[in-house]
Length: 379
Ligand code: 9MR
Image (cartoon, rainbow, N blue to C red; front, side, top):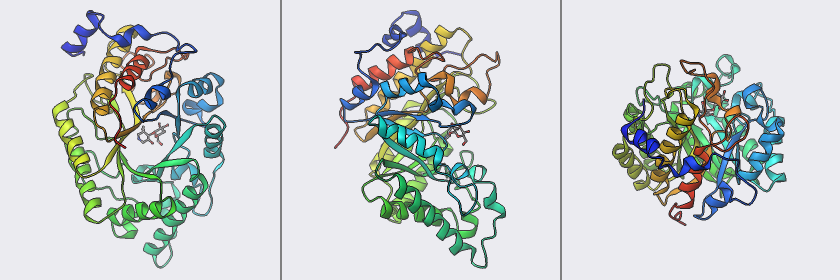
C-alpha cells in the first residue's frame, strides 16, 4: 500500500505538510501569492453546472476559489459536447458564468479545450452528421469556425489554451482517430490546423498540447507516443508552446490499478528533459492525488497524499520551464474522482487540498511548501 519512504515519513511525523490541516486563516499567504513568488500562477478547475461539478453554485466553494486562486479553468464547459449542442449552435452560457466570475474577482483563466481529440468525448451528433459532398473541407471549416469563435469570445481573458487534449492512445502510443480526423486526412492534419488557427486567433496566447501521460510505472508507451507527437509538431513547424502535464497522480486511474505510489522518477525526468529539450514549456494543468488504493484512515490517507503530492511538485517545479500550476478541483466535495473507480470500502475520496467541508488538508500545506521553495520560472 504505502512505500517504505511514506511509512517512515508518516511515522516520524516529519511531514511539514501534515501540520497544516487547519483552515487557511485570513492573513496566511494564498497559494496564488506563493506561486507568484517564482513568477507562476496557481488555480483550479471549476464547474458551472451538473451534480459533482456544480461548484460555482456553492458559496463556500466560491470563497475558497477567491481566497486561493489567480487562475480558473472551466472543467467541462468549453468542451465540444458542452458548447455545441449541434453543428450550428454555441451554448456559451455556462462558460460565460465562469468567465464572469473570474473577471469579477480579478482572476485569469485557461481554456480547456478547443479540441478533445478522443472519439468518446466528441458530441454525439458528430459521427452521424451530414458533412456533405466534400467532408474534408466541411470539417476544416467547422473546426476553424469553432476555434475562431471561442478564442474570439474569451480571448481577452484566457491567455493559455489546451488547444488539443489527449490525442495519444495510452495503450498503444498511436494517435487516435476521431469523427473529424477520419474525414480530414488523419489526426495530424486536424491537430496542425487547430494549432495554426489558434495561433492566428490568439497570437499572444500560450498554446498547449495537454495529456495524461504520468510518472507512474506503465505509462512508458503513452510517454513515447506523446514524444513522437511533439517531435512531429516541431518537424512540421506547428505552433505549440507547451506540454500540459495533467498530473492525475497516485493510485492509477484504471479499474484494476493496485498500490498507490509507483512513480519512476528517473524515467519521468528523462521524459521531461526530452520535452524541454525540444523547446517546449511545461504546465501542470489538472493536479490531484488519487487515494483509491490507500487504507481507510483519513489521517493516514491525507499524509500519504501530501507526501506524494509534495514530492511530485518539487520535481516538476525544479524545471524553470514549468509555468502555472492548476488543481483539478480544490475541494473533495467536487472532484471527478468521487464517481469513478470507487474505493473497495466505498469511502469518499480525499484527492484535493481541501476536505468536503472546505478545511485545508495536509495536501494544501504540501502545495504551499512546494510553491514557497520553487526556483524562479524562466522568463
Ligand atoms: O472532470 C471532468 C468530468 O467532470 C467530466 O465528466 C469528464 C468528461 O468530460 O472530464 C473530466 O475532466 C477530464 C479533462 O477534461 C481531461 N483530462 C482528464 C479529466 C478527468 O477525467
